Image 1 (cartoon, rainbow, N blue to C red):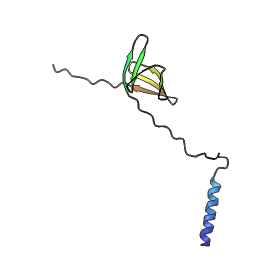
Image 2: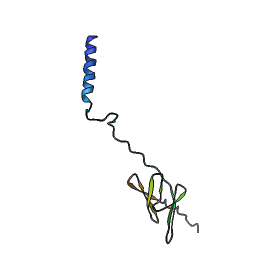
Image 3: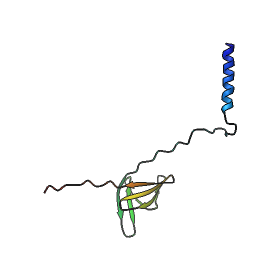
Amino acid sequence: MRILLIFLMLGSGYALALQDPTRPDGFTSGAPQAEPAREFSLASIFIGNDRRVAVIDGEARTEGQAFDGVRIRRIYPDRVELVDQGRVRVLRLEPLPQVRSSQ
């Protein structure tokens, strides 16, 4: 019994020795968890003489517009560049299905 008590005392002292004395209270040593990338649905792109519009998640959006913490950087004929958490993401239009002629 006495030996067990000695081991417990030594074990707790060892654990205290491993703590960083310069670490602020409440600080967790785990790496920050990155937020998972959100999925966006690009349905269509409309480009006119003085206007570019992309339909993202069912809403018409223009260049420079921000929504859900994301900003539309640029709209191209086949893709849209978004800035999400400081990173550039690219949404691409899905190619249209090819229809074969039966003649």
